[in-house]
Image (cartoon, rainbow, N blue to C red):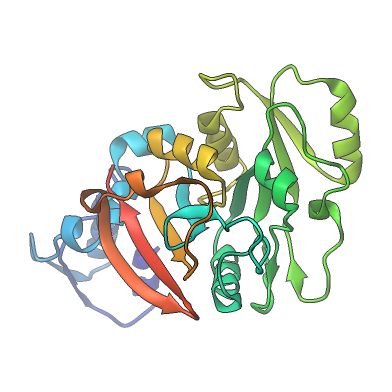
Length: 287
């Protein structure tokens, strides 16, 4: 907490531009500083949090505090025409983006508490969901799979030991309650923790309950690396807070586009940059 950091210094006068919007401790830190003899100068309105830090205001919104779900960053790679899978027969195989962009993803993974994917991604791509090439990662992110009927293969690369310089957190498989027990034991033996949750509206594993489960596991930042179906569900339920989108210089592709969710009026603090040969877009999402 910043209050404790200030008290460890010789600072005797603190100028404040805005109160913390979090209702759980709004102004409490200032009272503690006053009680310890510091002078507090409050310049009301000097720092417009809604303008300069809308994501922080969103994080401390009262209904979000009641809901208690992690901050969700949706990340995907797309072709220039918006597809999330490359054209059939692409010389790059399943990759859309260049190696520098893929390295950039690993740096992002190292800064979250969990990576969340759907079982379709696991079956189609057999990903590792690990962190590589970023140095030591003391607490690698959990690897979480939404898998209603336990289709995750026990022989998937997720369960293989890490190579030197590779870091990966425990595997959690989130299934719909009432799954067939014959699929449960092989996954547990492979190293997964299997959770049974109530289904959502369409009979699949509930995304809301999954995010609530992750919150109880101490997860505060989730990286959603999913296909169009799970991304669409997360957008429609308004669980996505932040975007990281890589656009490659490839035309065409397979599958639907996420373009309908990217209207300019829905995005806040847009930042565009280049990573290797690819374009990168970062933005917060207006709810």
